[in-house]
Amino acid sequence: PPFGLGLNPARGPLGGLRDRALARLSLRPFAVGLDALNGVRRDLGVPEIGALSALLDDFASVVVAVPAEFDLAGRAPLPPSVRFTGHMAPPLPEQEWESPWDDDDSRPLVIVSLSTTFMEQRPLASRILEAVGDLPIRVLFTLGPALHLDGLRILDNVTAVEFAPHSAVMPHAAAAVTHAGLGTVGAALSAGVPLVCVPSGRDQADNAVRVVEAGAGLRLSSRARPRAIRAALERVLSDTALHAGAKRMQAAFARDGAAQAADLLEDIA
Picture 1: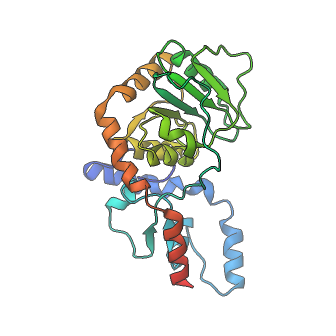
Picture 2: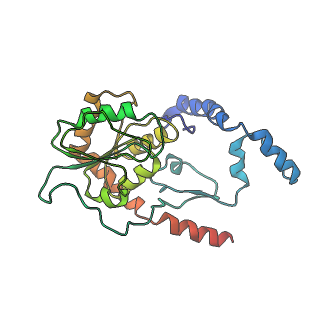
Picture 3: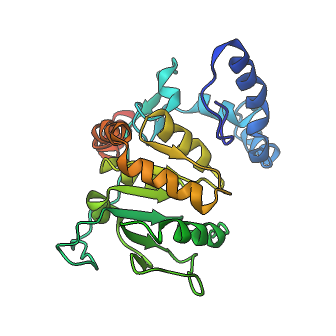
């Protein structure tokens, strides 16, 4: 599907027509610097381009930092320059995560993560808190520098922290609720954790589509009410098919994408 629109894969001739028509529009917001870029290309004696997508044709290699099994483009024939190297995970933390709950607390752990940059997350955070407050779960809500929960109702089963390394906490989680940023999605699927995706912008809707297509989670509207969020989370916690989908993706995300990318760069050099 065209970039940035959060569309499901095309089905049949009409779907293909949809993709071709919208593909011409989806990159237009990113073309504001095209004239300046072509000016530089003229100075270098390089042919001008008519669309940003044509830049990909110039590269010796296009490195895609997700597994091919996760990306919808991996289902179609691609130029040999396109290489899927897999997830590029951050280094493991030096110290193990210390749970704020007692060791004998058997309630499922749910990670809630809504981005590290400002995206008007507070209303969504409030609805998520209302959704999870009466569930028999433990909730670790990672805030980052852009989100503050001051004044919101936080029940006893929720612990909010500014930061917790996802690579350390995800292996302990039963589910994750997220804006569907690629970092959080990658961390969850690397641990085989199914997701409730509530995208609000950028690439997030596209990532959420891929999670659903992988059978590894559910997608909700950014305006979803607490009842819908709670129902989705309860399903993700209990649906064995979604857990199986997340486990299938775990095997793909376990490959070291950074090492594969480094090997590829050495080959080009």
